[in-house]
Amino acid sequence: MAPPKLTPKEFEEWLDGAFKGDPAEARAFCERTMSPSYLRFQAGGGRTDFEVAVEKVKTFRTICKKWEAEVTFLVQEENKIAAQLRVEMQIGEGEVKRMELMFMGTRDEEGRFENAWELSADLVEDATK
Image (cartoon, rainbow, N blue to C red; front, side, top):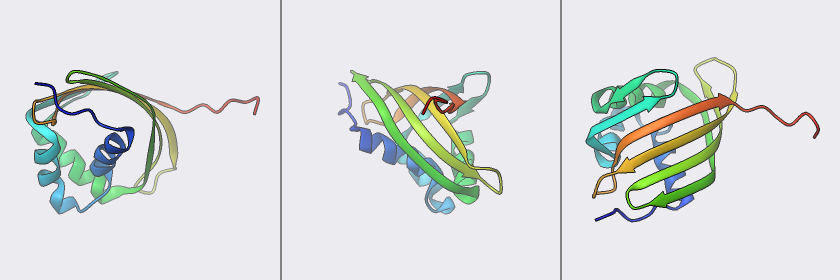
């Protein structure tokens, strides 16, 4: 049985949770929202399993100075989900980055993310504006 569909706001809240919140709560967040068999691939390289995800969430929650994400496109079919987001983020003392993020994933019967694929690129503003 497919999990209930997420609204764009619920998807934003899930992704926000990876960057905002108490670092000490990272494992609880991951256990609640990610399958124990969670596996994430990032275009261009990079593979994250559940335990690595816990550490990444803890790190992001510790060093992320700014995180704002807006879903611009969301589609779901059965347990599959695809989303496009515009993101502004600042990690540590680095510059604020504006990016576009493409996300595709599958969710288990409990609605936890199981497999995820991401592609991100710096957002290029239209020079004609």
